Image 1: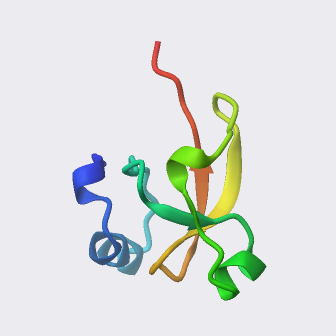
Image 2: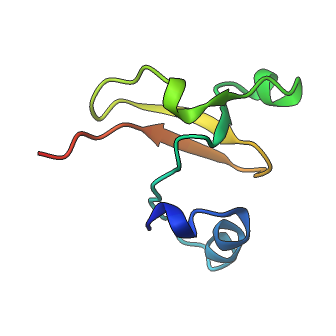
Length: 76
């Protein structure tokens, strides 16, 4: 889904339907890269992540209780 629809309420609806999704995140979204960071409120902006093309890492979006996978993809 487009970043316009990448919001907690939409994620919750999709998960209630027991399905998976891929969403583009806006650059200023805050993420934690470990559960400990999440618990301690240590979040970083998604645009500060240094991910290689198609590298996926587990993470947590601020305000969303479920683990997600974060990845960077370069369109060619």
